[in-house]
Image 1 (cartoon, one colour):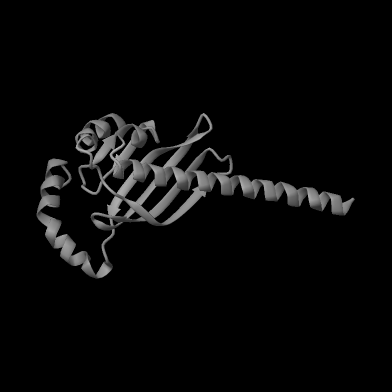
Image 2 (cartoon, rainbow, N blue to C red; image 1 turned 135 degrees about the vertical axis):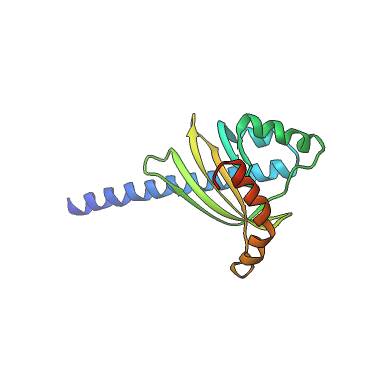
Length: 165
């Protein structure tokens, strides 16, 4: 009796781990396809992988794009046949217990050199969709002082504009 119970528990754990692995693979494939759609200037393919209320935060402090505005901003780039090219070189994916929400971080090889992408996904009608994406430029710690100096004036002006200084 004990051995049957133990086998049942082990089978349940194995099925649960397999389901999580399958979800992680699906998410990895979704993110890779999303990046590829941008590289191939496939506007519909790119935006079909995001939720209708999806958000994209770009590297500029002013880039907080809601889906509709991000589509409008991006359309000319896609129409020219060249959007952007990101390739994941490292990725971590995490999934909640109910398997309907996930978050991730990824290190990207881009035209801006190394960048960091992170975000959240949710399952809609059995399909993973990107709900929130954050892109940031990876800056080596030893270069932060130079970067601060480079952006100090523009950041100060933006803070004034936002009423925060």
